[in-house]
Length: 177
View 1: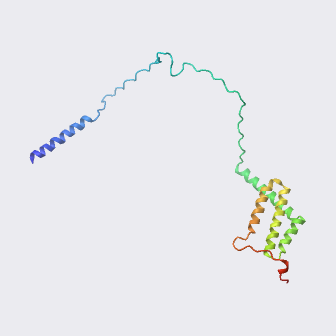
View 2: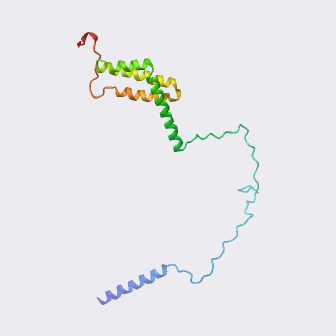
View 3: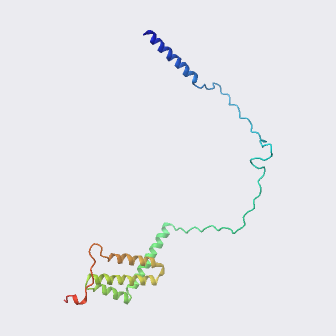
């Protein structure tokens, strides 16, 4: 048993010595490292053709028309954009008021208000919206998109989506009051 313990200690000591030998040793002095060797300037091959030419060869510029820089879209700051939007809304409201006072448009609104059935009222309102917003677009073409959007939005409101659409009532089927 003693010989086995002695053998194990000997092996451990040998392993420790072997590990110390494998470690790199650092320089203990502060001497600078040797400078790299200077590059050889005339390292051209013997046949006289170098990898990089001595001088650059001039290149002819291609002939053609000069390209113009694209114009950047004009961007407005938030204050100006908000002011423009407000002015457009005011102009739209003024034209709507003016168009509502016209006799044809007012007659369509009266027809919608005096309709006897829901179907007739929806049809009269669709006609009213088309006439009103068509008139606004005609008065000021810059507001055409806004007028079309309003007409479509209000006409869609009249669609029956949750119930079966009503059908027109024939005049003979009506019950007179």
